[in-house]
Image (cartoon, rainbow, N blue to C red; front, side, top):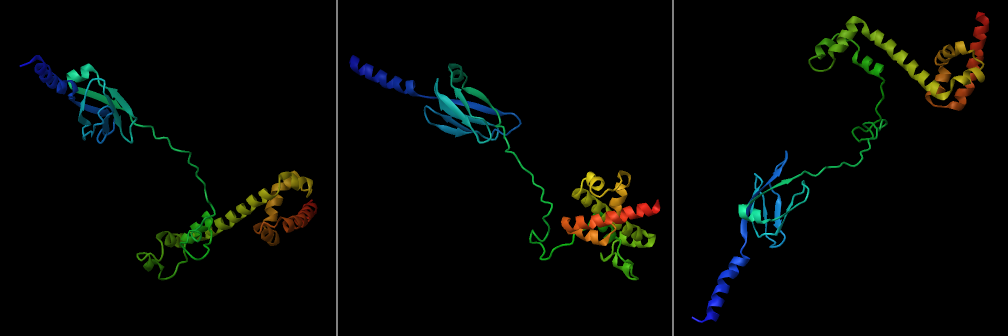
Length: 250
């Protein structure tokens, strides 16, 4: 056999060894997260694989090959294969979870939206104050009312309220609450200085005058309608009447 043939045979024998790749096994570790379904790509050979439910995988690689690990919920990671990795035929990679940054959330309170606005009903619902809702629970007592309790026709609270006389008390609470709401609206209309400087109401009688105004039916109408023009004319007349009462009492 000639020397040329020996060289050729030797070359053909060593070439596969020079270009053969080692199968490396590995495991991906993710703290408190599943490591399944992570993509592993060898950028040099362009071979790829996916980790199993335990985060394990196997891929062919040579020394200095670059492996890329990626998943939607994890931070991108790269691993360069060293001679020790080839020797051990095993690598372990630890990946971290991406931080989920939420955009600013603005919560808007829509206090004026009701069931009609949402299309649930086709009529405008009546608004009830807390005291009015309590009063509605205390329904009128009929001779058959106790028989309707099992059918939902009357609540147990309503029956107890009627027997105990609590309904009358609830009616008084409704009236008191209405007056409190009127006072609140009146305070939104005028500052305290208005009563002293414009209406000449003595400071010590200011709060009493406010209560005096919310019992006048005409002024209540303007107040509920938010008619500040006619309301101001009316409260001026009430101020004169109130001052007259004070003078008479003296």
